[in-house]
Image 1 (tube, rainbow, N blue to C red):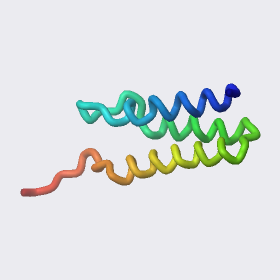
Image 2: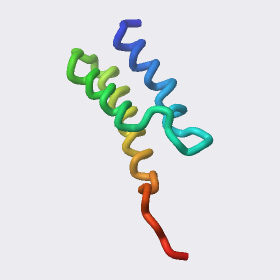
Image 3: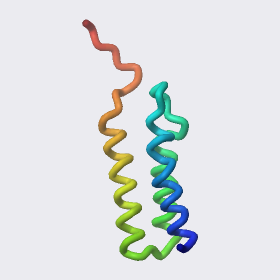
Length: 77
């Protein structure tokens, strides 16, 4: 396993639990993980499988962001 593979595996293990906490407040926000994944894409020559793994992680971030309720929005009952 290469260093890139290890980093992708680490992100895959900890990204979702760090964003979906019991309190609803992420330990590390989606923007942090997005930046880490972009850095991987920018600095490394990824194999096809590595690229697809990063792409799947980015898709997970996008789903989390799409399902998030905007903060500070007041809805009348």
